[in-house]
Image (tube, rainbow, N blue to C red; front, side, top):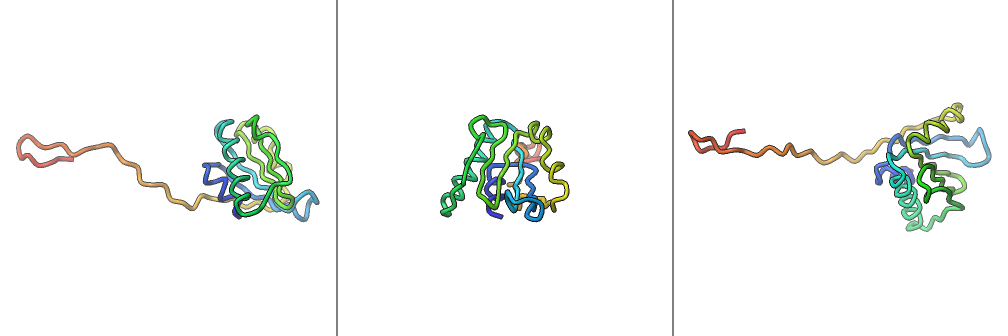
Length: 131
């Protein structure tokens, strides 16, 4: 789902999609994800909105992005919830919608290999680098 990719692109964590179509008429899917700071909550919500706007999809409504604790972006059939992690734990939407099928969305982009910061140092005896 494109909306999940947009969230992951801004380093959202614990991204899940709940299929609530058979349980409620408010939406078919809920995307729920976490952010590690209030600033990141805002960044993820804006990235979702801007990314879908580029594809001609505009939200029906948005709430909470400025405050940064819980942002909601409503697209009718899909509602995105971006939580500051402690707030997500408190509201526990996954628990509230426990009957809904849940799909975890993993980031498929592989991170770049980390550099160790070690450099080869020439040996005094041979003049060749040692590791």
